[in-house]
Amino acid sequence: MSTDTPAPTASQPDKYLAVQRSDEFAGLRRALRGFVFPMTVAFFLWYALYVILSAYARDFMGTRLFDSNINVALVFGLLQFVSTFLIAWLYSRYADRKIDPVADRIRAEIGEVTHEDGPRG
Image (cartoon, rainbow, N blue to C red):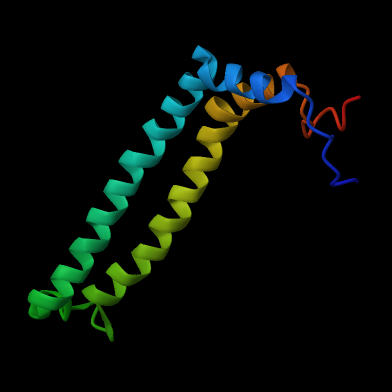
């Protein structure tokens, strides 16, 4: 597999600018933002809740569960990892359905390499 890029021609910058200004590309950016921004806010709020409860609700976070050494803080901490992997999995599914097909079409229009087709030209 070669990593060489073709020498730029006079029409290449115009081609990329046209794609950037297209409705299809704008829709692609909207679809990406429509997932990334709300998910980022949701995760940040979830993490902030964990930190705030750890700092100001020590009695609650120290509550033991299941008559063992497992407490609420430990469960919340482990759920941070679970939520991170869940978000990654959800994004992967979302990208496969909404983002990748459009990105592949745009890439094909400008003659770039797609993972299905291999190098062009």
